[in-house]
Length: 484
Image 1 (cartoon, rainbow, N blue to C red):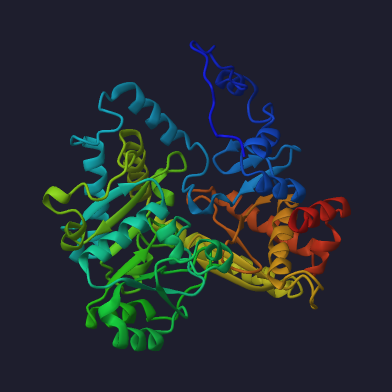
Image 2 (image 1 turned 90 degrees about the horizontal axis):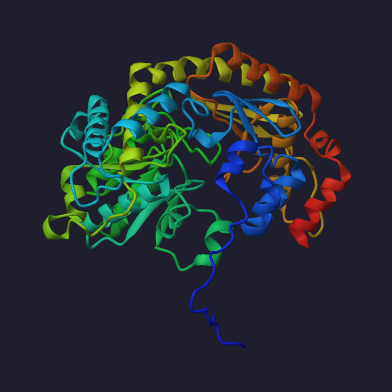
């Protein structure tokens, strides 16, 4: 094995960069060889998979709510995984960003000083939470860059607050992120297996209050916190039984265990409420937020915690015990501040509730007309999902059952794109396709979205049709990618 060393010339020549920013601005999305560069320098297998399916893009935004595929196909934007509350490049938000960049003189990354934008964002987040959960009026905010980071901060706060407790309780099919700490809370064998041992976690059936009571009765001293999604997002838009979240809070409080509400996907209006957990009767100790907070433009995450819980992690001279370079940066904080303001002033929570009821009614009608394709329609505000029927009714020798389930969703996403709808894959649910349209989507486009979903279902009356309509050369490429 040769030594891993490189001899450098005394005065190396300036390197040649293969792509210039000006070229991308000039040519636009269609001009760059994005697929070639992605597969050569990035996650090649992922983009090869998407290419084999025919959904790799790149996509251009025609309006905040409409996309154009490389083949010219017009798509209604119901993708974005709940992270684009106003759609792509929403003009009022873009104009605000341009104004901020032109006028503010504050440090871009004010880590060792106060920051007007960071302070204002934190104040508004606490005010919004306290408006529905008054016990949080003196809570504190830690800002990061993603939902997974928000969960990591929440875990550390819980462990610091209950220093003798080393474990967490989570729920089946939950999704809390893929960084190493958050991964322990995401019970998915594919994601977890290569990285064990992870932090010890007790995983319970979602919605099972008796299992929670038994677990905390016997293990409360060793449980730092229960973490719960008020609606399973990546788990397939699954709502818990009525009253479960309220009783979860009561059980945890009785045993002295903290509760973390993961509102990364449900929070800030998407569910039809500012905080879905609070709307269902839970008063969590810690709340995690992210996706819509960045307005679809910048990455922002936030962890809101009761003052005593927050200070357990960050007290006095130990107040730098958890930090990050970019969290609370001026541009990100400014965008998040404006996004939060628009969400509240336009009452997009109420709009999501109203359109959510309308959309779910349309989905249920479609599922009833096409039971050979769709087994269930689900919704929570503007979080929507279809569960598909199995693509095959029998096992395939040499092919794991989970792979057959996954291909069902992938082929459905392909056929939805053929019908003019950009949809979401579900990381932690089998045979589930999700739709997360922008909260401010015009009503005529919202209705057209479900018209196109109807057309998709009519063209594929049985799930097997998804496979029959998939071109054989692409199927062979897919098999080769999966199994070599």
